Image (cartoon, rainbow, N blue to C red; front, side, top):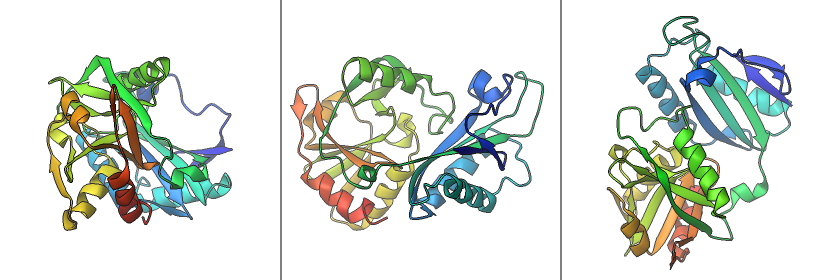
Length: 276
């Protein structure tokens, strides 16, 4: 297996970063998790728009060859090299180089990794997820909250909590006590045919699958709303959906004592995700 560091192929079992890397030291970076299917990047426009707008917000100084076209070529080439071009998960990580908070390199560095995906990632999950709320963190709602930040501590601890409590995932709260998102996904609730998801002002990651669904559902019979969502809203919902770029849509079977169906979720998956 190989990875790509700043456009150069490196064996995956070889060191690639210095200990002074700012992404390692401070979480000073961004990442994208991208799905490759049949040699193409799914939802690529949303991925690269989010990446470059995030890098601009964080005032990154980018190398001249760090362009969308070169990144696409590098990602596809790496997947070919690792024999997973038909179905793969790609992680593109960008950090602010090496040094302390106020000194050192100024040019960003980037790493591309890829792994083959199981064919089950092209289907909606057969067994619904069991989820709960992570009680020990509150995500802030500021200009950085919607980024795919390398500073992932609240989500990492929520994922650990889920594993310790035999859950499939956990919801992460914001400082208002509303649900922001889950450890690896955005959240949608369906109640009486109305689909609700936390607005970006609630601190959720600006997910590409979230954005895709909001766009395609506008011209359907479904009504969509971006609002604050609480635990009570989850318990009152008819169906609960988790979305991300890799799995597309996953349906939730149980939140605490409440159980859910997946009829509308399956319809949405078949119409708007399976066909991407």
